[in-house]
Image 1 (cartoon, rainbow, N blue to C red):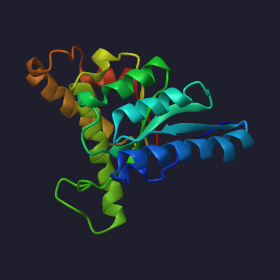
Image 2 (image 1 turned 180 degrees about the vertical axis):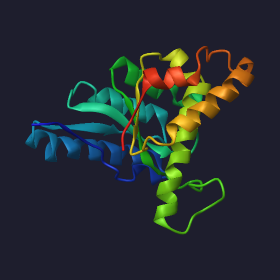
Image 3 (image 1 turned 30 degrees about the vertical axis):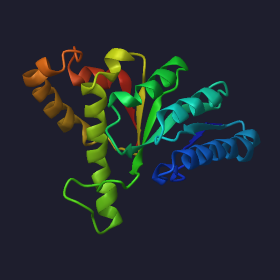
Image 4 (image 1 turned 135 degrees about the vertical axis):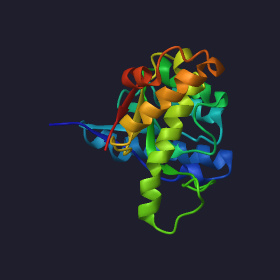
Length: 202
């Protein structure tokens, strides 16, 4: 039989209290173990982390990394700030150290509109706009130098789709060639980094 990965979208990223977010993440991950992983050997899971506090997120990774049934660290596509920003880097260090991919799942903490034009009226607008969020996160992770610092880190774009990627990479690589003096740590074309460090799901 095959293996399934559980991605629990419980909404802990929406909580403003860092301590409450930590408590919810601990509870969600513990629940995943007791109610799912312990009951079926075919199941794996993603570690849900409180992005409201980087130290708490690292603690959660360190706590569960020894359990090999947890196979990635899961965050949402539309964060409060772009994922490449350096205050997030301890999370990437912990993930790389334990060989855990960073899973970026479609979704938002709804601090900012999900479109560049403001808030949409319907779910179909929200869900369609997620591809813009994925593009922004890929750009941020590469441009800020995450893969120069953590070259073994793998990123999985979950429910991102794939059709947006070729045109986006053409545009990203084109502008990188013209403006790469601004980001000297990006020593290879973005398309090569994506090929080596990213995977996508539909």
